[in-house]
Each structure stands twice: as C-alpha cells, then as structure tokens.
Length: 103
Image (cartoon, rainbow, N blue to C red; front, side, top):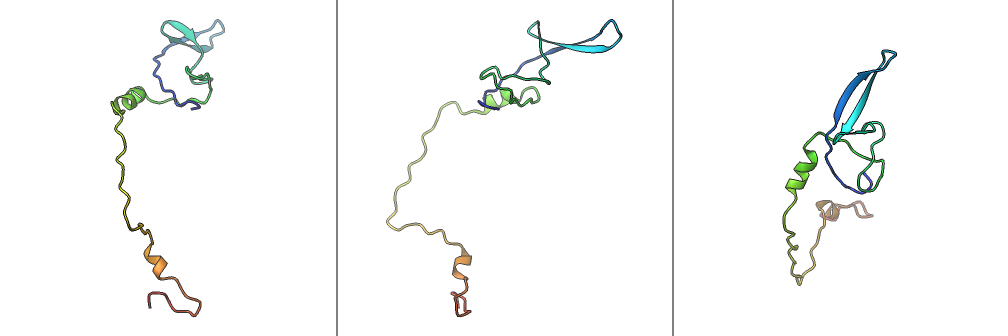
C-alpha cells in the first residue's frame, strides 16, 4: 500500500462460457463491468498498484476502532536526578585483571 488508503468494494462475479466452450468470468462493481480485482488492483486514492486485499469488514472494523477525539499526550515533569537505565550485566563486566566489578 503506497498511501495507506482503505476502502471496501463489493463485486458481482458472473461466470460465462464462450462460443468455444471455455469458461470465463466477468466482474461487476456497482453494475458496471470492471477489471478483475485480483489480477491488476489499483488504489482508488493514489492509483498505485500495491494493494492488499482483505476479508470483508476489515476496513470498516479499523475505522470503527479509531478514537473519536485526539487526546494530547501527558507531559512529564523533569526530575532533578537523571534516570539510569543500566542493566544488571553492566555491573558484572570483567575488569582487565580478571575480577568482576561486583566482587
């Protein structure tokens, strides 16, 4: 997906047989014949061809899960002491004389 645009489109699939007896399929969207959405899909927003096809209801489910109003992030107060994020392994490193720093 190039632009992140999501949409849902319902297709009617019609199965036919040509004059030679070979089956073929046509796709209809809103009553108009359209190219197969599986062979060369095109984004309705940016005309890109990198499109993900998902089960019905997935786009509507994501839209319903979006928050209605944006809440501003909580501002953290600065502390007088800088926070340390040392792992326990930092204290157990070996010195050049072979002893550990914790000994």
